[in-house]
Length: 408
Ligand SMILES: [Zn+2]
Image 1: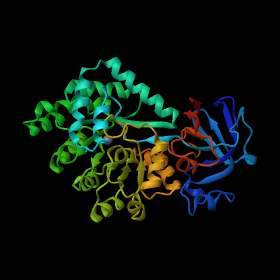
Image 2 (image 1 turned 90 degrees about the vertical axis):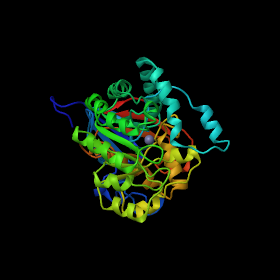
Image 3 (image 1 turned 180 degrees about the vertical axis):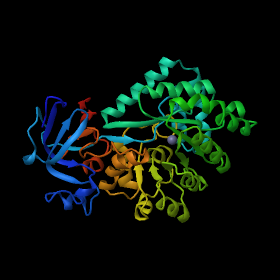
């Protein structure tokens, strides 16, 4: 499968069960396991599978016995392989520690949006090198758990200089960078939120837009209301950024409807939804990104994934990794929570953490293992992807390839 001008090819054989997310495979190959999946699967499963990688891309997938000849050969040893996880929502440029806040909350105090200020103070005080060290540490942690693409945000600087440096640092590590100067109203503007919105949509936006692809806002009581959120996202669009939004996390509100109105790629959290919110999402290109680490870490009410899926909404699953409300970088942990507590099947949860995350980032080159996609793969020390939910808390990810190169 190689010519003098093409990249070397590698076949990975002896894959017990391969998740391709290829919709054309539907139920999977004739040998796919309907029993294990419990019904119709979106995963395009292939049993006894092989994958051929050419350069940084997938060149072929199918049954092992039909695999073409290649330059190199790797034996998966009967492990399952899934697409590398796409974590489409994290907040990883920060400094400081909120152990005490977590400890207090687990002793009975409720979560509110205000705890972010603690991290803002620590992040402003940190050096660039310290922020980048923290970021790379959490990225390495996520990679070991199978995450091959991640989005991350600013939002702990809340000044022109601190927001733009957070994005500058993040942009060295991912293409999926989100400007979130509108995380909360800066404490410096506590008496004049309108002036802070003017800053976020003016000088701060101008300084941040060159480093970012996305703009985000926390639309919530105690953060930004619907009109402020609309002004912020609209200004971001005018500056060439695409909107996403923290919506309907702690209470009912206008965030989801605003996301649909502005064609946001994703409305994230979606814990408190009316029927009209769900209808709006179902009839839009906006993905509902669920972040069960947040509900877990704040002992809050779970989002109802079943209700969204049954209405036809595209659902993504992500970590929301941040020091305040969800300090986990583990997508497998979120898959287990989504299955146990949010009404998702294991197949749906794995799809949402891969193809769903890609949809939430409007990417077609990741989140699936079909020819042409990036060769991002997570190997599981297990016979199938179902074990991600069946064996919660167990480090099943034993090998990770990113862009055709083994990283873990
Ligand atoms: Zn978040």
